[in-house]
Image 1: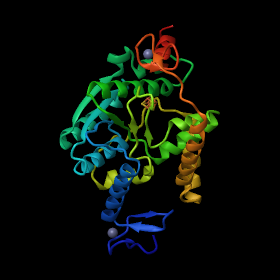
Image 2: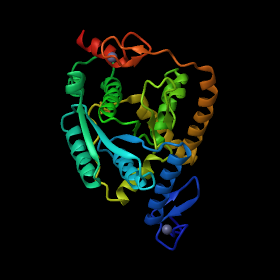
Image 3: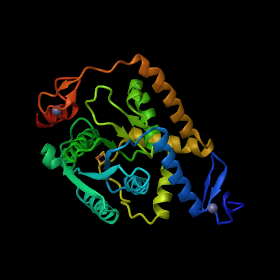
Image 4: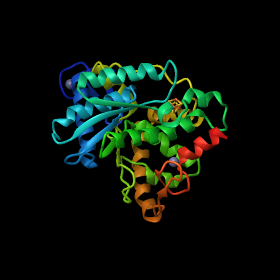
Length: 307
Ligand code: SF4
Ligand code: ZN
Ligand code: ZN
């Protein structure tokens, strides 16, 4: 940093936001992230009067930052209630540490926490699935089960909405993944707020969706947030990793590329939504959850695992 002075005060700059051409000292950076978070929540009308938000907290940097920022924001939405919901996928030596960090953060912030496990909900763990050498990666199963587990936990605590900690990088990676999987219509089912007009699924909000991952890491570090740093031993999503590297290179050479991609997806979503009618839903024959098919995705997977 040639001129290492904050663009907003006389302080020492610690971070340059390249695409805006501004430098931040640690205080101004923290305030900028909190302001951006507030603006995202308000612009997309993420919180409403009397909302009870189930915050998906894994113990990683993103979810602990989400919880911290929501607790700070709670003051401006006094009728909003927060409950943390955490999922134990059964990954030895990995999830235990994260759950411990999540529990400590909830205690410190005075937020009630509910932990549910794959073992109790589905009778199997991600470690066991990984050991079975099934056709798909463990992440394919784990991701579907996590969505279902979070939904169940949110229902159990009586939540009206679910908040997840997807950041800008996660969002644009998923957009490109959908394109590379030949499934652009899935873009309709993504975005900062997912509301089901049929009223069958709880609305989902992603208040960190406009904040780049590196800014969340820095915010977590500057606020002294203790988060899990080791990565999951089963996490080898090759295509997502390649997309991550590609996007990081693009953003380095052409700052702001990730935001541009996100904006393009927002436009596509509006165009595609008009042409993509929602499927009719029925009850899953096994678990009763809403699904367009005879069985929901999780029950289909559990059936394949048992076969
Ligand atoms: Fe599950 Fe894959 Fe995430 Fe590990 S990396 S917790 S297996 S989705
Ligand atoms: Zn400053
Ligand atoms: Zn089912």
